[in-house]
Length: 326
Image 1 (cartoon, rainbow, N blue to C red):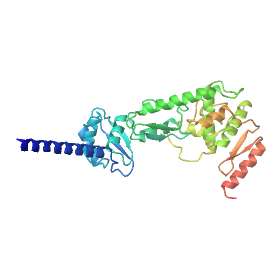
Image 2 (image 1 turned 90 degrees about the vertical axis):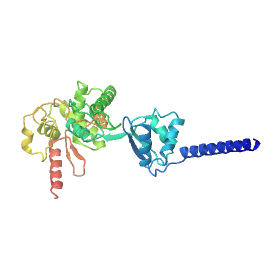
Image 3 (image 1 turned 45 degrees about the vertical axis):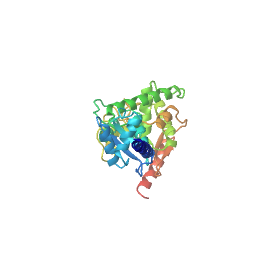
């Protein structure tokens, strides 16, 4: 009997040692850096079970043992908290760290940059081309109502939802900047300022010129001169940017009868011709004060400005010589 009890006690001690050792090894494996050698994005589909997720992690080379992950979810009481979606998994993440990521709900962020100066149709084309977005855009937003910048979103975000975010950001920014505008500007409404900003946006891509260009158009408005800006003609010919012009602007185009053709109408066109960026809006609300009435490309990417038609004609002649390589 003593021998039997001694043997039983020895087996008990051995079992304790084995269990303790297995526990320590499991803990070590749970917190040990994983095999992933570079950052990765993992997609968990809706309805995936914990064992399915564990196998996916193992097959993707993120963890070594799926059972260690399963054990970790039980220990952390996370087996019912794993959420579907895309997740950023840092390189060398342990199984425990992977669990924390999947429970956090912090999804992988996709990015879409909307450049300044696009029309609504061009922005819609960008959104439709992004396969991480979902849904259709039922209503085309008015030009000048979307803020061009970089937007972050998760996979499955609705295209219309992203449009609404752009509208809200533009509305908030415009309201704030309108309150800080220069005094004695001729714009009766905020929309008129946005119309002017859209023209400034299309006329120059050089930040240092925007306020000067805005000043030119402001001077022309004050003198009752037509704005005579080519981008408004292009907007008219392309039906508001629905289709590319696909050719140079011809002299005969300047005579087309259209409410957006600023060679034929007085004052501002009836609406914005693009979605202007922050800098063009600020330049429009804080235009440079000068006597310039004209400007033309100078051949270096910028523009030559003039206060008289005679001076402007000289600048145009210089531009043509540069263009023709003379």
